[in-house]
Length: 254
Image (tube, rainbow, N blue to C red; front, side, top):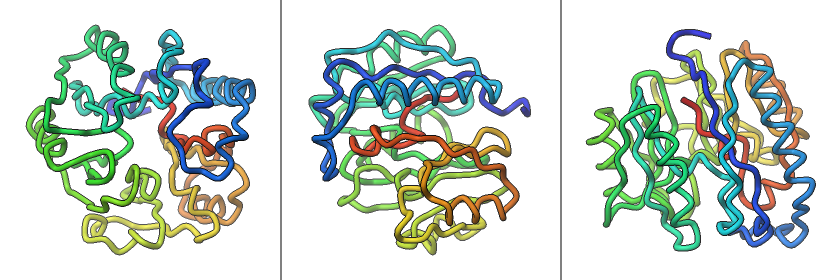
C-alpha cells in the first residue's frame, strides 16, 4: 500500500434490530440476521487479508441501520466530519463513531440545517464528489468543504438514497458507474466503466489498492473491471442488499 492508502477499517456488526432497517427492497421481509452476521464476518476477514487493521465497534442493538457505518462520517486527509443523518431512526448511531475517531484525528459534527451521510461521498485523489440526494443536502456539502478543506463537486438527484449506489472510485483515475451517471460532467476527466443495467448493484465497489471488492453474481461487471487492470474479489452481501446497503456501506476506511 502507498502512504496515502487506508490502513484501518472501522466496522460494526449488524445489531438485533437489523431486520427493521430502512429499505424499500422487495426482499426486505426476508432478511436473515444470522446470515447477515456471517457475511459481515467474511467481509471483515477479506479486509484483514488485504492488509487493513479491522477495528470493530461494539454492536448497536438500538439502531437498525448501524452496521452501515460508512454513513456516520466523511474522512479526508486526517480529519472527520461527523454526519447528521437525514432519518430520525439513524440519529444517535454516529456518537460511538465520533468518540472512537476522536482518538485518531480532529472531528467536527455537522450542524443543522445540514444533512449529510458518508454513502453520498465518492473519494478521488484530488477532490470529492457528493450526491445531493434524499440524505445529503447542499448545507451538508458546504460543511464538508469547509471542515475538510477540499473541493467537492456535486451530483444532484433528490430521488436517490446515496450516490455511491451508482458511482464508486476504483483507482487509476477510473470509476464504475451506472448508465444514468456515466456522462455526468463531474466524471468527465475520469475513465468510466459502465455497468450493465441488469447488474446495476455492482456499481458499489470497494477498492483496496488494485483489488476491487464487488458483489457476487455480477459476472459481466466483474469482467469489465478485470479488463481495466484490476483484480476482482467477489463477496456475498445479499442480506445487506435487502436493506439497501452495499459493500462500501459496511466500513469506514482511514
